[in-house]
Image (cartoon, rainbow, N blue to C red; front, side):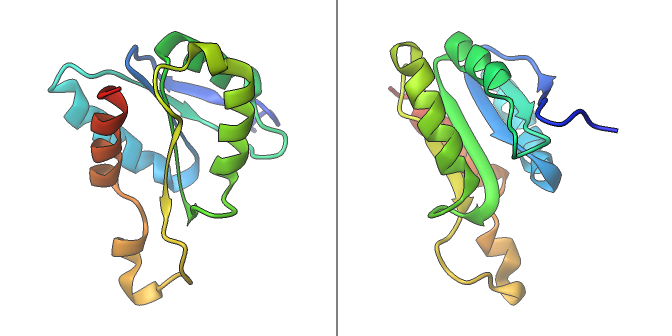
Length: 135
């Protein structure tokens, strides 16, 4: 049984904090394997519950890495990543080394036939990690 409002630190890292939840964590883990080969370490957090969500664990991680990527399968507009980004920006502004990035689905109706193109995968995460590290 999962505790409500408590996230899980899946993997410790020093370069970028990546938050995901549910089945989407598999894309983050795959991306982490690719990044490790280039000397990039990701701190991976499984949010586990959305309401309430674990602000403290995420804020501590972001203060350590200075960078945050939030990824989920829902649309970018109106997705829960926007809520997390807003609160982390308030709490960790002076610790951020780069803007918070969101890697989410497109702002279109969910296309069942083209699901694999709609859902952000490890490749989109990898591209965003390269961008966020360039700041």
